[in-house]
Image 1 (tube, rainbow, N blue to C red):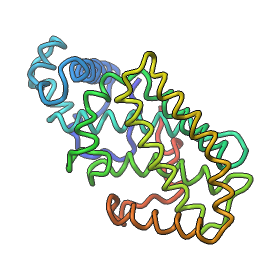
Image 2 (cartoon, helix red, strand yellow):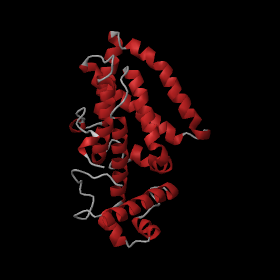
Image 3 (spheres, one colour):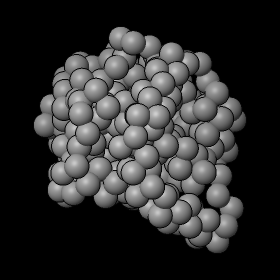
Image 4 (cartoon, rainbow, N blue to C red):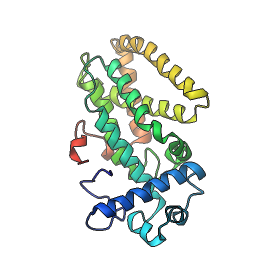
Length: 249
């Protein structure tokens, strides 16, 4: 069942919620996601979605007035489910918790790989609907907060002034792995599993580097560049502020 949103973002939802309405909305959403996976984002039209779902365009527009609203809904659903599953990561070092958060992300996104691969050009390059767009900040904040929490609440957490920058860089590394995974052509994404294994092997060396002033300076400088290039300051997450408990299932 669709998760409920505490503060609607103006995506055309009709007032009031009924079981029948939610079932219709879910059917239209699932149809659109499948069609995007089959045809690609550019080739998918709302009229085509309505036709495939056996619904009138007017009914579809009541729930999803644009393709953009469908993409935002997908981001919302996946980021919410990820945050829900990643909330109670096991106690351990930040390295262990990061790997747990990364593997959870791959597990949550796994069933949607075909659709997300079709959306890869949008997620990477679209100024309005991409991962770092203003309109998708709600999803980015939700996921980024998990990676900050990974470090802040680790058994070996560094100082707060280093934990948050490190968490943001781990979030960025996680995005790079996800993009690699989407583009991975190896059988059963074998190359992605090998990449995660390589990262696992390298993390202890990274932890040692962070004990040295040059390593700490690198993290802070890289984080500053990341925020300057890709993230608006007003979109910075407040760790723990976007827990799944803020929404009902």
